[in-house]
Length: 392
Ligand code: PLP
Image (cartoon, rainbow, N blue to C red; front, side):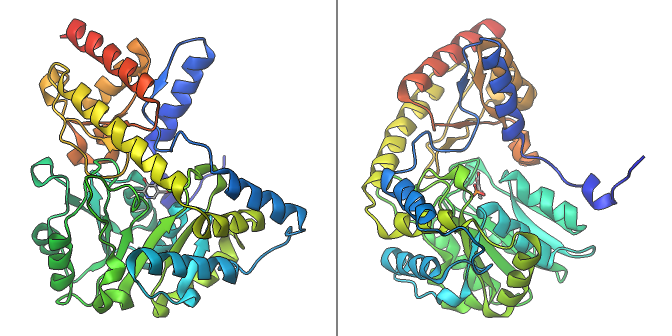
């Protein structure tokens, strides 16, 4: 019998994919399923982006590209970040990756080893913890609390740093909570990090376009004092409804870039060429589809929050960003949020994710993605209402 090394026994999962598989299986059996589980926009990739990829294929871009990505795309990333944030980014420090997830993998791989500690948000994107455990490093959860608006607390985060801490992962706007960490708190965090020069920072800003109520996203690129240890993760998946294209980027400190370039040569060679041309069209082309999508998410956000707060035993703080609601379900009488999530799918065909799939501090919550039509969201809320009233 074949056995694999222990590191693979420690790899976790992203349960959203398992829920998607189960929801699809039920739908295939003829059940009417409303999927509020998966975190991907329910929009098509804008047409001009698709056309750019088709054109690239027809023009013969069929070969390998530089493993770090084609220069015009890296320049487009730098231009976009300058346009939106006034940030100056050297295209020579931009890495094009097959999705935002791969930046996570690379950053955690660079710093993760037995004895190292890596701080990550809990509840948070489940892959952070999974990859940390894979490397043998010690995962140190940073609690993300409803009482704090699901924002990072600079004081609590800094208080968890030890001489063994190698990497701190932050994520705002956040999955699964929709929390946005205010600028004042990020200022405090960055100021506090001055005392810990041995700690690198990975800022996952994949939802940076999805900030509501007239607020602006605070990028970590705005702090020159940490540029020499900042890994910025972003990509096209959410902003341009391109989850299936597998295209992401990251900005690296000069001291790490060569290591990541070597990893890319070893692990994935490059992102497929046509997709990279699509990425240029996305960043340089019209942004009205993005604005329309964000406006639609905002409209649904109000429907979801209002609807959830009308359900028995559920209270839901208004998320400030991303496209998730993270209602508190402690009052429903269901001791386990995972059991509640599973019952909602099996009994009334509403797919949501149990909070514990995002970490121990997720118990008592479920995550709803509002990447579904307003009509379906309303229908799901009605089904949940009926279910909660009868199961009490
Ligand atoms: N970071 C966060 C917080 C996410 O929620 C996701 C996807 O759900 C990713 C990164 C990865 O995105 P990609 O599809 O680009 O790998």
